[in-house]
Amino acid sequence: MSDQIPLPAGAYRSLPPLEFSDGALLKFSREMRVQLKDLEARFVVPRQHPRLFLGEARGASRRPR
Image (cartoon, rainbow, N blue to C red; front, side, top):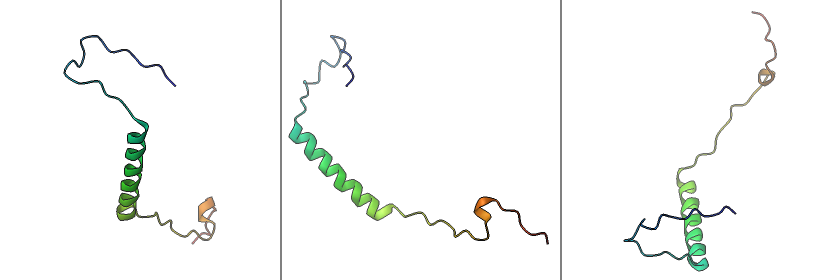
């Protein structure tokens, strides 16, 4: 992991120190996963590719008219 950059001594005096607990992080990640699955179920539409035929996908030459 990367090293943390120390903050200047006078920065953010009004904010209390913040501690990360493993339980809170696990709960947050589970809730975010549920929300993302819900958003995907409501808004994501699978891409429909057109059917390719007669060698057009390979750039085959066409017969002259």
